[in-house]
Image 1 (cartoon, rainbow, N blue to C red):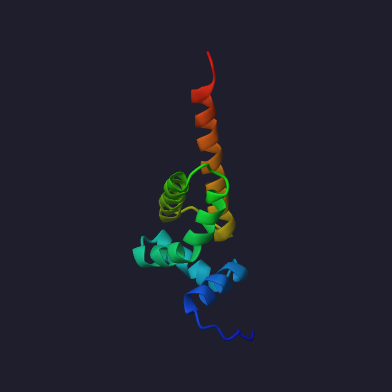
Image 2 (image 1 turned 135 degrees about the vertical axis):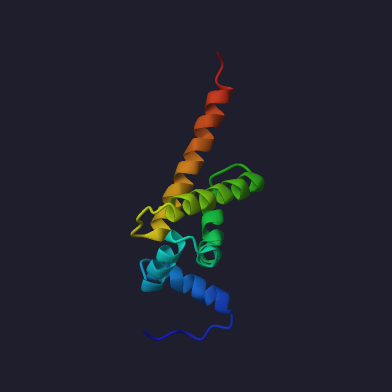
Length: 116
């Protein structure tokens, strides 16, 4: 594979991780996380936090709520992954958690605002 010249290494590696998807490096990170490696989780967080946040931001009414929901997504991911759950596609798994968190928000919001 030919890698393009990129001055911003973080942006390059982030986009590389996101396009590779189910890479060997991702599988190694998942294995380390399964065994409680916080450093591996931090690396995973750094790669996915921005796209997950943007995904949530466009679906909820405020930035604060998007930040809180993003935190909840990564907390749930840590709980499940460190607990031994098997994940084939980490990116899809994180987006699924985000979708579920957004649905939970709107479900709870609508339950509170319905007239009795």
